[in-house]
Length: 84
Image 1: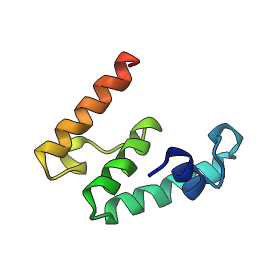
Image 2 (image 1 turned 120 degrees about the vertical axis):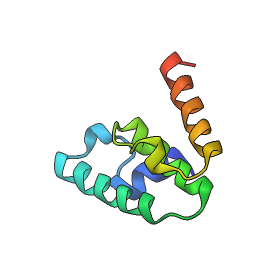
Image 3 (image 1 turned 60 degrees about the horizontal axis):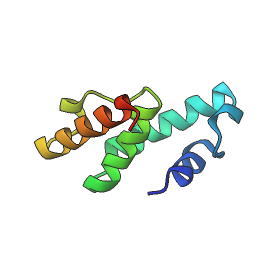
């Protein structure tokens, strides 16, 4: 999943700063629903990653059944927090 494609899919734009608050909220609602329904681990992780970047990600123990997926999410969070 490409980041710009995800932004366009959920918000209709690739620069969130250009989206109105109503468009942002509607996109987040759709993103949360799709995340909750997604069964493919890779796609679910990509959707969670976007939610995380937007400050809307659910807790890891709620988001992922697999400890491997939770650990991958922790690694992503650490990487993003370190600026690397």
